[in-house]
Length: 282
Ligand SMILES: [Zn+2]
Ligand SMILES: [Zn+2]
Image (cartoon, rainbow, N blue to C red; front, side, top):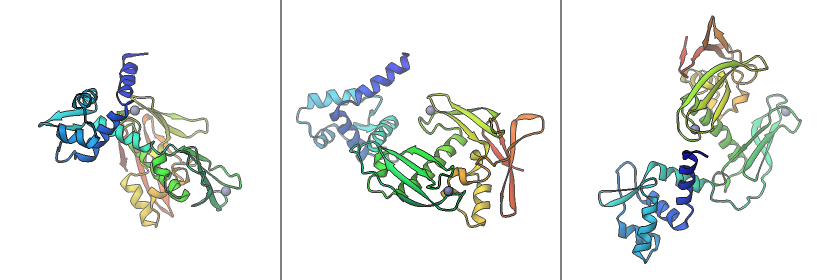
């Protein structure tokens, strides 16, 4: 165990009390980051339902300075406090939701049949009923799944995977918001180049097809849009330049720059991806 582990455990310990979660949630609901508003001590105490000012003050003190700050005579949540409340809310509906199987509005790239999906135990699984290789299995927070159809959940997953990949492409960790660093491009067993990157703060490491790093580049988005396809609504692996068929290659004699061509119905755009994650069109 390191000091960081101890600090992290202490942070959880602070939030392991229902009164403190209630205080933080109240502050998150009643303040706005933009106008730097705060809530006064007595207002906050009444809102959370404490009669004993001493005990309330004790719990509030535990939340300071990591989750709550005092300023201008009032209290406001810190950025970490707001994020903690978001994490708590996203996992709140922990009651086991009914499994929801069904077909979804995405076609199998191999056979063309509609894909089947189910959500159970916080995990959504998408597969082709004919056994083609399109298997997707990923976790979805209960707050997202509550009240959603299986189609909604799968659409969320498609967008969520893309947003995570986009964060990585921007050099930002989708888990902890720390900096991600592209370590190197390497050739996978299937012969295709992949981009390996690692978060400098947490456990997150990503190994992505190089094409994944350019999916939301404006040149790619508009190329697809011109051909009637909203690239943001596609499974990443359905996109030819991302899937195993992608043909990214090193620029001659330079293992730090990779070039790939994205084509749609005869139109194409060529992009270069550098080791610092920057992407340019050629
Ligand atoms: Zn199929
Ligand atoms: Zn991280």
